[in-house]
Image (tube, rainbow, N blue to C red; front, side, top):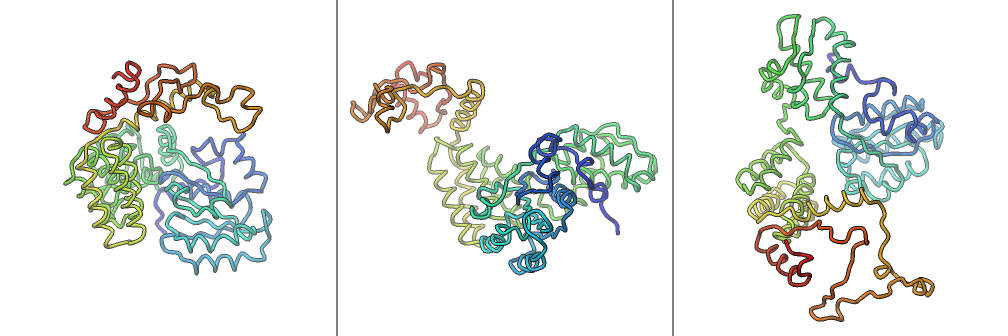
Amino acid sequence: MNKPLAERLRPKNIEEYIGQSHLVGKDTVFRQAMESGVLPSLILWGPPGVGKTTLAQIIAQQLNRDIYTLSAINSGVKDVREVIEKAKGRGLFGTDSPVLFIDEIHRFSKSQQDSLLGAVETGIVTLIGATTENPSFEVIPALLSRCQVYTLEHFSKEDLRNLLVRAIAEDEKLAKKDISLNEDKALLRLSGGDARKLLNIFELIVNAEATNKVVVDDALVNRHAQQVIASYDKGGAQHYDIASALIKSIRGSDPNAAVYWLARMIEGGEDVKFIARRLLISASEDIGNANPTALIMANNCFQAVTSIGMPESRIILAQCVTYLASSEKSNSAYSAINKAQVAVKQTGSLSVPLHLRNAPTQLMKDLDYGKDYKYAHDFTDHFINQEFFPTELIGQKFFEPGNNSRETHMRTFLKDRWKDKYSY
């Protein structure tokens, strides 16, 4: 069997596993639970090619359990029930119960996820789900509450370089050639941080050279780049790259380019909910207060495509994409929360001023909770000049309205009320 390099080099135990030290490091809670032999059902959330499937296999091996693997793309309720039937009677909660690994669990429908609940709750199987999507949105609450969610991070450049070095040193097929890795910048760029993609592209480039002595540098990689991408990504989806191009076209106010990238995603078989979620984010991050209706439009789009499905959803998505691309832009809300989060990390948990505290009990009132708070609606124009910041942050500015018609009005409103405090 002609396995690709990424499969041949797949780690067989936790010592060979590269990256994710926040999870599998020797003193982590996750590692200790795995080594104890008692691990709850869990969801592994992270981008493609960061080791979710490999980690699931290593967990099953560490726990000395059988593992059943299903892909949410081509499995249904019937497949789930068949696995559960096989698992019954094998033992409960950490003894002999097998691991059920479901790849791309976010693609399971509600009914498919519902079919897992009983087996997970009673311990007939230990579920490990892998997803590239936020499980808070894509996994039903009843199932999510029965699982621990662990986030896998992008590989660092050093992690990816270590993979290439290991491939040259350990892979039997590559060992038949004299390979020198002189440069890796182009390889890392093409991989997009996906270890599986990196290794398979590397193998294709090495095999494209007719001689046994191969010097891998950026020039060689770039020379083979188009051929390599076509060979590796035959579907042409380039999932995250095309999603990035769509959002950047919307941000750049180019509806023609945006609808083109939308068409690429649709023709590549992309999940319409994945597209609609990106539009929701863009509506706030890139348009925001310049046109608050954009978020309503994007949310309605998400609800509509969720209900309707393809092929009609393409029309709804096209309407939303062209609307967002043609809208005024502002990232003021996005910038404001970024600045505020930096301040929180730098200053920690500052005390809430007494006049802003809630006082539901007499004791709290006696301690001056809520004292001197002024109820804005009791004053002219529903406004009274009072301080809402912790003392340590008085005078800080996080939010700056953008230069567009709507936010110019916001700027004027704030300056009229606060005078110099909100002078931009």
